Image 1 (spheres, rainbow, N blue to C red):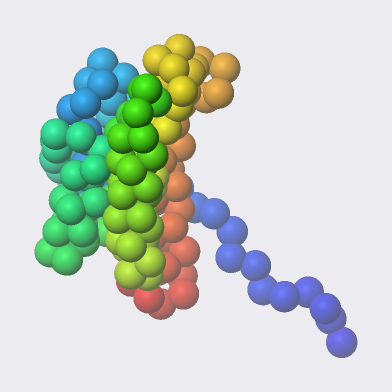
Image 2: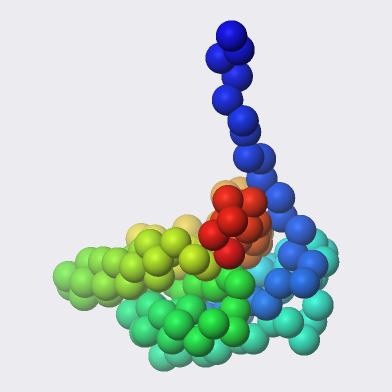
Length: 160
């Protein structure tokens, strides 16, 4: 008797997928860099330019609202969420981060759409820049490829 279980391995082929990208305008220089990385990764992995829809929202807190609406529309196979929250001197940071993460998690928890979370939650602007091509990689690219990998797994499982 073999103890080897079937393994479903990652696939980041974006060909034929319709992808929604929700981006926060707050800290726009950083979120624009996240968006550029996400789009670059998607195109490099076969996405068609006209299969990408970018929706800008005021801040990270609003990302979940639009991501949920995109998911409910049935028009998208994957949603990529991009934003940047930098800690300030008040508890506002904690509330915005928790609200954004909870809302994105609810979209992912639907179990019928690939979701990539590229919302940075950092203490300083320097830390944010380190995550858009610096020593911590490019979180926009990572979020995009995560969303693709999840939707492909859902397809393999017959759930999409």
